[in-house]
Structure formats: C-alpha cells, structure tokens
Length: 353
Image (cartoon, rainbow, N blue to C red; front, top):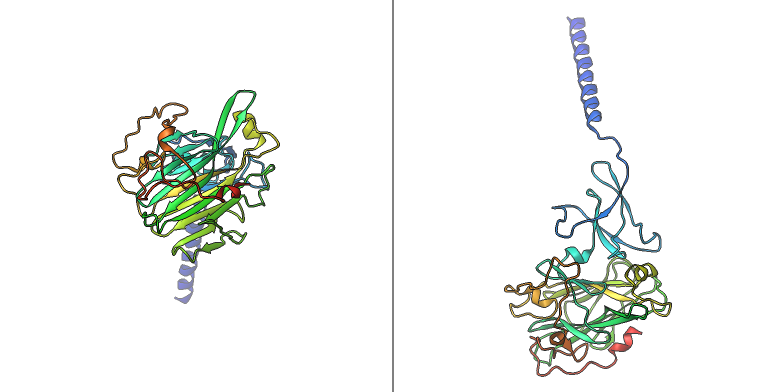
C-alpha cells in the first residue's frame, strides 16, 4: 500500500508539473513580440487620448531639441519622442499612443510663445498686444493680472512679434490698502544659458530669493500662504501659489536660432528673446464678472466669437485691455475694487535686465 500511494503521489506531481509547463507556455505565447520603434507625431488638440498617461518633456542640455525621451508602452512598443515645433521647450508625451501635445493646446488657463492662450472653454487663440506695453489678462474683484509684452521686429519681412515678458499680479482685499504686488518676469539675456536662472520674482518691490535646487521652496512671512517653489529644475521654472486663490506656473524660455528660422522671428545674436510660458489655476474660483484677455473665458456666460477653425484665431480689442502700467488696474474692463488705477510701480522694470 505504501508503494502504491507513493506511485500515485508521483503521478500527481508529474501531472501538476505538466499543467504548470503548459500554462507557462500559453502565457509566453500571448506575449507580443518586440515592435519596431516609432517616432512620435503631434496629436490633434481636440482629440487627446482619453484617460491616457502622459509624461512632461522638458528640453535640456543633455538632449538635442528634437530628441527628448525614448519611452516604452505597456504593449512593448518604443516611442521616440519629439516635441512639436510650436512648443520645442516643453510638451506632453502620450507614449502609449506615441503622440505629443503642446501644453498650451490642452491645458486651460495657459499662455505660450507668440502669445497663444488656451481659455477656460478649451479653445486656443492668439493675442498679440504690443511691444513694451501692458495688458490685463485677468481682472476680478480681488485679483488683477497684467502682462507686459516684449517684442522683436523682423526687418526683412517687416513683421512684428510679441511675447509675454513679465506678469504683474495685484491681489488682496481690493480696497487699495491691503493689496500686494507680485512680479514674475523673465530676465533678458544675449545668450541663453539653461543653468543660469532667468526667472525673477519680487513681492512688493523686494526680490524673492529661492534656493537654486529642484523642489526648493520659499514661503512669505508678510503674506500667509504665499509660496514660490522651483519645479522642473534648479533654474528657470517656478510655481507661485497663494493658498485658496491662485497658482501660477512660469517657465523662462528662449527663442532659439531654429525657432527663429522656422517662424521668421528675426532673432539676432544680441538678444535670445527670453520670455515666459505660463499656466494659471484659480483655486478659489473667479466671480461671474471676471474679465480680461484670458479671464473672460472663465465667465459662465462667455460666448466665444472667434473663428476657432482658423489656423490662427486672433482676439482683437487691444485698447480695452491696455493698462497704463504693469501694476495698473485701469484697463477698460477692470473689475478690481480699487480707488483709481495708479501708475506702474517704479523699480520693477529693472528686474528684466
């Protein structure tokens, strides 16, 4: 009986091993073979992948501008990622679909490049403003954001181009006595050096110094809840946040020779045309009366009258958004509760140089 029981146990063991081998073979046979590497293509901003996982791609000195990352999807296919020409410095890569998107095309409340805005309604438009002038982007009862525009003239084509050089954020009680002035700007540079910090932040005229390391954080002692944090690297990218009010992500980026060649910006060796790419989030929400180039798109009754099917939908009406200075709240559509607009605050423009 002991021998017969041992034989039966042995037979069961052999059978289990056979089943295990069969299951393993079936699993291996279902594993897809290695697929050839693909090169990413720009995706349609109106049809982003649903629930897709994305990777933020940032250009740096270790990679050529047309090569950022090689990623492998869950299905074994490798995607060679190239950011679209319109946003070579930073983009979103959906590796599983081998698609790339400019952040300004997908994220509401952003402004990039030759100022291209994405409104809260998800539509993208251009607002060119004018060189060395300020325009109100967002104006609400206790928050007012102006942008100072920088520009360049292409003598060969006779065209003028503009970019956002600095933001002037006025916030507070709105009665003119408890308001604060926050400056976020891009410092000019003849030659771009990504290891040098070109982002400048100041609060009420005093420079804000943040340790030059990724993730470093500064907290204001004068304004509770106001912080400045370095994001992607030790330089040129920060998030300025006021608890319960707003978060502004600002990246200082240059116009490269390739950018200038493709878009005919007329860049010379005297100026790398450093400007800001910006995204905005409003944690506390905005009132139904908010206005401004970007702010109006957050109104519940906002109706987009631009031809969004056009290659470059342009928002006009620059005069009603024009402010007399970076911290002036006197644009025609101003909603900020303050007695008078006031002139530009002296000293802030010097941060650009």
